[in-house]
Length: 74
Image (cartoon, rainbow, N blue to C red; front, side):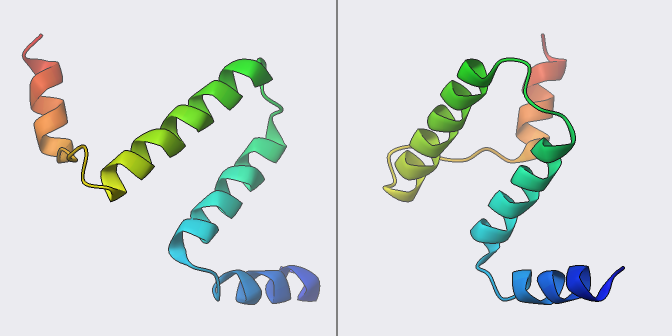
């Protein structure tokens, strides 16, 4: 890793976890531009809306095990 990349990495470690996740997402997206930016924008808005609703206690999360169990029942 270059010195610049190492510095950026160290700076990124100082971000809040959600900020690091957003940075990772943007970095991944930089490899492959979205095929349909309108759809991606709509999904991003939906995700943010659901996360906000979860934070407000309006919806509950399911464990991955529960989700996979429901999928396997179909």
